[in-house]
Length: 88
Image (cartoon, rainbow, N blue to C red; front, side, top):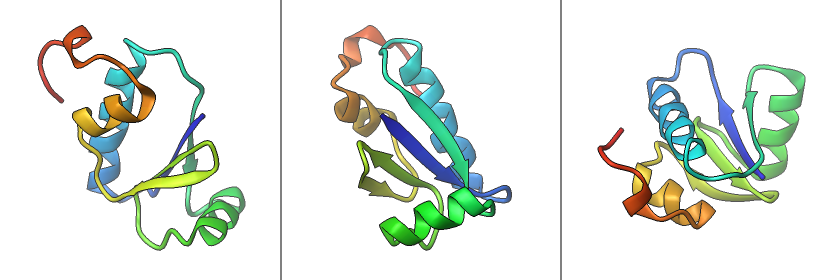
């Protein structure tokens, strides 16, 4: 399961969301976005020591803090880069 911790005014979050949307077109995995300004988001951020967004959590472990690129996201979910043409 991939959980993306975001915040409303975060430009890097928009990019990272677009990356995950692209990857989800080619790989099957559970995905959720959690806003850090909500109670659930604050709890999740505190648990994982996420102080800035975006934060990417996979199976309850932080795998990336900050903006995520397509190649890293594909690696995280084990998808083949050849399945996706173009970039985000």
